[in-house]
Length: 439
Image (cartoon, rainbow, N blue to C red):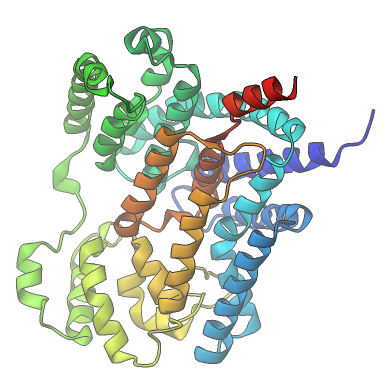
């Protein structure tokens, strides 16, 4: 049998995918809902090693080398010069950015030749379909065991309900997008009803974002042309029914009385003009007087607190507070900044907050340039963009700015970056024209 490097790298990619997306559920069964179990720690380290190894083996494009090198320069200045982090703390914090740094060049390798691409996508389609079906029994088990909420993360385990919902919608959308006949939308939906059915686990947790995802899901299945309004008129009843069913499941399963501590309008009226010390005392008081597991300052409040933090620590606006704010544990200690502001960093952090706090304005500019590049750097053999898929991905990027920093999670990035690369296709018309001219 002929040895193929491509085969080894593809196998490693999918091993990383399944480790990232499935060990959480197994870990929860054995150790309960915790992010510090031995299996979780070992899985995370293994996935990081796989990503690093694959990147070293596949990173050849100049653009990838530029992005990774520039990021390392920014991270080094922030960590060593501005924040005096040790090499151990810095390297551990760098792992937080491995998915963003390494998955695009890895996927670019598989899109570099038709042979690699076709074999990769053929295997991928089968495994993504299996992934969707695995969510059904795991989500049902978690729902009956814990009730609707953050613990319902499917194979990803507890606290991954949001990432699970995004992943289900994007995987289902990709698979349906390949099979759908856009001239016979309703018939195609009927023929591929299983992909619609496999959306239902997203309504057994409390991810309200699912209502936006399902609407855009169906809107973007349609080609945007002069017949778009007519097609929407036919599709609208299907969308209304599915949203209504989803709303029924959601309202029937989520007990609002057990929701998180909310700092709503009254909170802002009282603390909007307060300083950081007052905000910290308010958060500490809430944490002591409510269930600690449920305590989480709302995202919008965190964004409003950030300017106060920088005012209290001048000189960090450009390069931030270093890489170790979100990546630390029993082995590697947290940075001093985290120890002071753990009440702010705990829970869900919007992407804007994560980028600015860790790497300041410089890191934020890097992120902007990086995500813009994803839409304009075309794989040479696959230059035609699928506008519907890329519009869906763009919506994801914009939502996460204020929703959550999911880009640090390999289980999320394995799905989403792959989804984006799958939106680049061959230009069949251009190839046919060139063939005609050649003959």
